[in-house]
Amino acid sequence: MQVSFIGTGLMGSPMAERLLKAGHEVYVYNRTLEKTVPLKQKGAKVALTAHEARHLGEAVFLMLSDAVAVNEMLFPTDEEEKFTGQTVIQMSTISPDESRAVAEKIITAGGDYLEAPVLGSIPQATEGKLVVMVGAQEKLYEKWHTLLEAFGPAPIHIGEVGKAAAMKLALNQLIASLTSAFSLSLGMIMKEGIEVEQFMNVLRNSALYAKTFDVKLNYMLKNDFSSVNFPAKHLLKDVRLTLDEAKSLGLETVMLEAVQEILKKTVAMGSSDMDYSVLFNAVTNRKV
Ligand SMILES: NC(=O)c1ccc[n+]([C@@H]2O[C@H](COP(=O)([O-])OP(=O)(O)OC[C@H]3O[C@@H](n4cnc5c(N)ncnc54)[C@H](OP(=O)(O)O)[C@@H]3O)[C@@H](O)[C@H]2O)c1
Image 1 (spheres, rainbow, N blue to C red):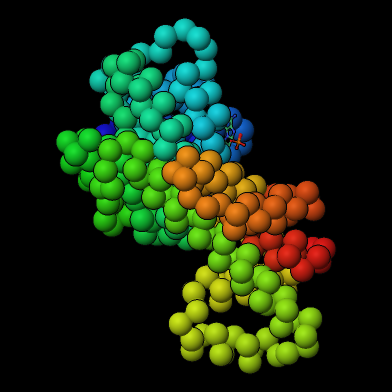
Image 2 (tube, rainbow, N blue to C red):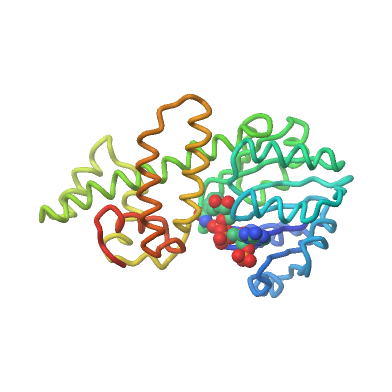
């Protein structure tokens, strides 16, 4: 199948590579052209403009920072874009409202739309083990299920457009909240002069343990967040989106507002492009 993939950043590059490995003809586009070079060497065709990429694929994938970027790439001018016979598969993390608004514009322009945000990071993207959550009409999910299996073994149909976006936000607020909570406990242990391994052993054998604690522990102990899976700036974006969504649902958001403050402080400390676990430094008032 001829497909296009717009946004070959940290996640987009290994995801586009999965499509190549599955035998598809892949046209890639990225605002910063250099990031497409490794994919070209692996057999991708490079589109030089977003317009070209938008109209070359039967399916058009997007893996971009946010909804602003998604809209800029799909609808760059006020002129009417046509997507007749094409399907847009939007995989960036955006809010349910943002996703529904994009869906409406694509449908008006004659195309089909699926949202398919993912859980997992660069290692899972590289291995094709992402959890792909689909928000779309059932018939579109059925139609595109096999293509989506390039990214993860069992794409899940969550419901109509907006539902997968909401599920993704519900999961990502756990990344931010759990890491913030763990950072405070670990910070206390270190400042109290208690052995970290002793604390971890108790934690690992308790119901409070989450695997992510051990995954991020070494980054925190070594004060090295340069191996970036998920940048802090994108986690802050996701927390902002979750706050808006949770407020609109009438939920108490005071806890998440505090987490947002921690992430804002992280970004203000100059760590926006580092792995999000650098929020530990904002909690413990330590510099990288
Ligand atoms: N990293 C993860 O673990 C992870 C996991 C699940 C979901 N996500 C989500 O996946 C999406 C991509 O994340 P990532 O980690 O791959 O981030 P990233 O490396 O920062 O990539 C962002 C991409 O968006 C492009 N972009 C940003 N603003 C743009 C604009 N105004 N116009 C055109 N292109 C623009 C960037 O182009 P340039 O290269 O030119 O800047 C780049 O291709 C985000 O929504 C993120 O929340 C990330």
